[in-house]
Image (cartoon, rainbow, N blue to C red; front, side):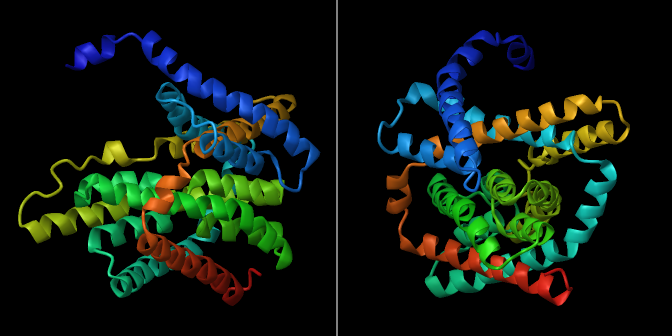
Length: 341
């Protein structure tokens, strides 16, 4: 089996992805241009809105799906790696350590509020875990990593991902506005966005919509937070195994869940720190990363089926709203206590 997979031609894969990826790129070009005309909103926000508009009006056929999915995941990861070339390793390490205390508090708040509010709303345990981990760590990626461990069904997974995605979109639009209303500094907003917005794509979009410095800071904070998926998955795997009194984590794979793009982000930052990239190329790399972010956000928008979100029902949406609000408020509260605001 391994041999047949290795020998599989890449041509059919590329052809299957081409329509959806090309659609995302075309819309992203329009979003990039409009973002230049309206820098306060920015290309990433416009990209996700245009994607949502196209998805819920024209509704691209199934042949666009592979490329759209590729754009929303792989292109996003490549954009984060490209951003690493503009950040020194010292800055990455310093920001990661500075944000860890806030991240740990918001992580705890997310799980406690998911348990308490979920119990009050009558949401069952597996869906509470999925929404809690999606809000606490890294959105859909965390949900995908946890699903095989707790053995949730596709219906629960779809509920959780739809709920998390809804608040990702809201965060991209709302957080920069609230940040300006509260007169947050670039670093204060970056820490807030990096610890309180669910998905990496939305953190990056909101951060860079606020300012370049806020975007850099938010990206590092979010990547530090995303690494916590490893211990969380291990804890859940051991808990499932203990409760079932058997090897409930038989299909658990650390290699599968590890966010490898974070490692390559650190490698890119190390290359930047070592001075191996000519300074004249750094602005171009940053522009490339920004455009890739717009492509990724456009693809995320093209994946948003608003009808399915509405059909998911009110309880998981209320649970997601409550947990998300608790995390956002706790992040600001911790920053206020430690004197970061």
